[in-house]
Image (cartoon, rainbow, N blue to C red; front, side, top):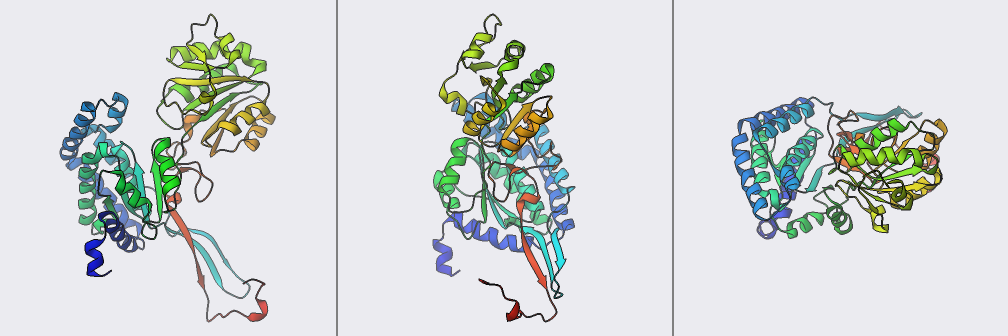
Length: 435
């Protein structure tokens, strides 16, 4: 790059270029070096928690002045206890196996040529996310452990918090003798900086959006950089004709009401008509006790009479809505296949669950339903990297290429083939057509 380019290049492209250079330095480093940097980050977060919480308090004050909902403010808020918990999570990441260098396939060809497919870092990962400053540290730690440089673009509402956090992270990384530019904040609070990051193809290897449907759609549709789509969660619970009613109520209640503001909470209940008369009064009473409003079809409305449950007529829009609130769409279906058809039409491909005592029904449901996770007799809330035993996750992918479902450290890698010979040259006589 010439000196003239250096003076005219935008700040966003400048940090992306520095990240690319830092990624090349980070990629070959052994696990012990990366783990030492992660432990240094954890220590620094605790040591400088007062600095972090002071910056966060400014964001919280601005959010309250703007009339932001308390649920959003809670996700934005950092306390010393929360910072300590984030630091603990970073230590956990340091303890995870390093995926880089893992041999996925290895064999020797008849001609003696040795072929190995090994995991390698993606390179430069851009994360675009909303008002959760804990994501800043989580994403940085996971990217560092997997050998990637990371560009972090949080929401403007958390700008002061993220600026303080990234300053701490960069100082800790530099103190551990790694290039500080493996972790960078994307400059700017306007959407222009997001647009520039989305168009930084050749400098940024992949973008991962984390947030609501609007944010994800904007990145997926407008980016020239490859995107791993972490999807919204229009998740369904289907109660089969053959089922344990008490188990079904428990799974439904946990799926819907254990935590409503997350992508793996259930948004639609489907009930087989053969058990609807017995199951719905139990389910509606349990949902009412949890404060859930049900948006039901005619059969659900009829079943709700005299139960005291809050049930309103469902509209076409309810079947496609990710509520992220104490709301649930519900319908009675004539068969398992009808439930599958409903899910195929409205699912976001995140998590779908069946509650059944029939092995045949479970097998058919898992074969026919297309989603990142299909749960049998288990809550939708289990779709999570931590719950799956990954130790941590960068997000939950609802797409099919590269990664699908909870994304841990291996999903932050690609692979390359290492071919080793001993003076091998290709014999023209063995060449295949088209190669």
